[in-house]
Image (cartoon, rainbow, N blue to C red; front, side):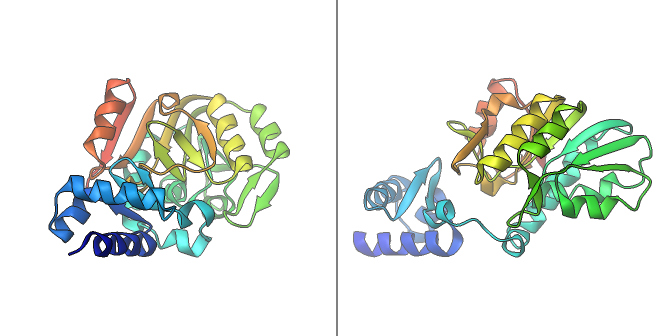
Length: 254
């Protein structure tokens, strides 16, 4: 296969899947990983995609915010497994913050019927899933973002500053060692920052597809979290770096 044919195939994989894993692509194309990396560098210079650790991401992912139905269709099993592990860190009583997002929403089944627990959330869908149980549910006020059905803005952060949580469960659009945890929207990023600032323990829930991605609004360096819950198939270079920095890693098995 000619170099331009390889690059055309890599571009197509990025367009369809949203990202390209250099090791997987090398195996599928029957070439060295270094060859794929050079091809990805060329494609980045051409403005076709953006290089990230371990491969590349389609630029469409940075320009397009996925709809709620699209998010539900992205890695649902991985998100559920992450939530299954994160659930072990939910206290039986006290106050917790739960951020908006389809991954944190998977915690709903574990938040029902805990009368000693107060769940404070900006996630409308999550609140609806637990509010009819014996768990105390506090839905934050603010402007609702249609893309996530989450409350954001000055009112949301004002409400949060009046509360203190034992644990905050936070989601992210992207996560990298260089940029930390990032979000598509600056208003959502500010809510995440405020939740983290008013929590004793901060836990990030991200499925492994989020690693290596960077979005416009940074809300925390990776060292700002006490614990990160992700899937066991995440690149070991990430887990090694995180463990070396003192951040606890909890891996969800398949």
